[in-house]
Image (cartoon, rainbow, N blue to C red):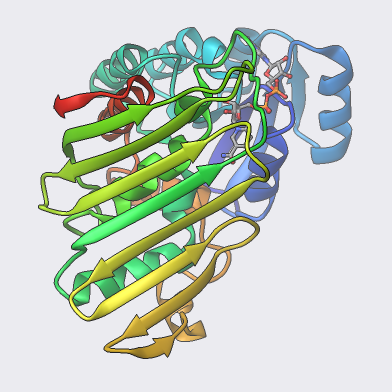
Length: 320
Ligand SMILES: NC(=O)c1ccc[n+]([C@@H]2O[C@H](COP(=O)([O-])OP(=O)(O)OC[C@H]3O[C@@H](n4cnc5c(N)ncnc54)[C@H](O)[C@@H]3O)[C@@H](O)[C@H]2O)c1
């Protein structure tokens, strides 16, 4: 029996992943979709079977009266829709990047504070059960002393409705650094200083960043993100006292750990303890709504990730 009515606004490529997660969550019932493009609207209606489909998202919200809305448009189109949903008191899932700038994210965060609805930003790497299990090991060892992330891709041109790729795309691993350096099970670390260097390539879309970040937890992190290089590679690592873990997230998360020199990987029981293989941000959001908890990747927290992305992009050097 579904507990919550859900709707999706924006039914393009990435919405497919949201539809899959919604279909896998028995506490959600897909009541409506909104998509401007008629062909996409019809295709998604046939494929995912919402009760109603609309071109105008406001009409969809009025008619379908969802409890939860996933906004999966490009970042440049998010702000007015997210503000509208939060003003209506709806629980709102916001795709990354949460707006074109940190200022837009802050505007959404302010609206969320005034809203009866909760908001979650879809920083989906945080919710991988393997990542959660690694975090638990690191915290048990006294916390991270160092973490690092790499996010590389061939030339990436995202168009005018997106901020630069390190903000729109590599944001996943900028956020992962904060998450791996986090102080508690629920909280990500806050960046306090960045020493960045940027050297863009000559072709458009070839943005190249190296940054060292100091967090409020005392952890240091390094971020490398290069566009216009040979392949899409997503890796991260985190180190504690006598403990090191390397995560390869290029395809699915693969974990290579060393505890006092002994190799380990994440065991099935650890994954189960983190909610099992099916755990993701949609399951977490439903848990938070039904148990009146704050989502881990709430909008106020996302402002820190966006500010850090912007600092990495501009090669900021100094306190944040
Ligand atoms: N988490 C991830 O791994 C991941 C991967 C890919 C994309 N994304 C993010 O997902 C978002 C969407 O990316 P995409 O590739 O699906 O883009 P897309 O362009 O394929 O889809 C966006 C859709 O939103 C629709 N839309 C825009 N404004 C609308 C409105 N007012 N009402 C109804 N529909 C509207 C567009 O018509 C379009 O079909 C982006 O923010 C992107 O950064 C995340």
